Amino acid sequence: MKTIAFIAGVLATTAAAIPALVQGNTGPIPYTSTYSVVARPKQVVNGTEPTGGLPGAIGYYDFGLNVDYNLICYHIRLNGFKGEYESPAASATHLHEAARGQSGPPRIAFPNPKKTDGRHGRVSVGCLQGPFVTGLEDPETGEDYGADFQVSQIEENPEGFFSDVHSSLALAGAVRGQLA
Ligand SMILES: *[C@@H]1O[C@H](CO)[C@@H](O)[C@H](O)[C@H]1NC(C)=O
Image 1: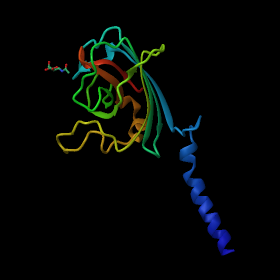
Image 2 (image 1 turned 120 degrees about the vertical axis):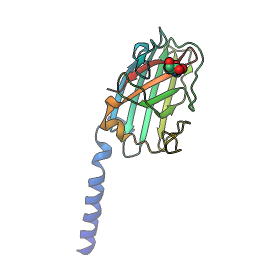
Image 3 (image 1 turned 180 degrees about the horizontal axis):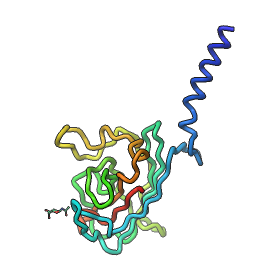
Image 4 (image 1 turned 60 degrees about the vertical axis):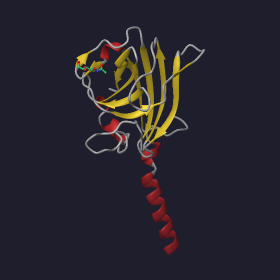
């Protein structure tokens, strides 16, 4: 009887842990949420000042998150990008923390989209897991802006985050899109 009670206890614990993982699962990677973002030049700001971004460019940022793994999978396509990728961070393709019309620190740096022969223009696809490294330090803590970042923060407040990409022809950003 003792053994059965123990097994039942283990099963109960396991069962309690699983729902968070399978919730929202629509495929082999158990995402807890997904986002499809269209990023445009007109959303780019420097501080709060609209810059106009890089006219003619557009970005499609699709994300799948798993908060239990602190994982973000990304499928980023850029069309009409011009100039060179340019940013003081580890890459020029970012998730930043700021509301619409405002500026804020990068939390995740994605590999820059590479030119393809196909219809997608430039593409970057893969997954990253925290702790994240943006290559930029918070001067107040001396830590990388991504070090303590949890993707659960995105799910809690998607309006507070945006994706962008920076060009030598549009340093403040070529295109930008809020997650919500
Ligand atoms: C943002 O604006 C400030 C003030 O005009 C300027 O000094 C700075 O170079 C601009 N930054 C970018 C990235 O364009």
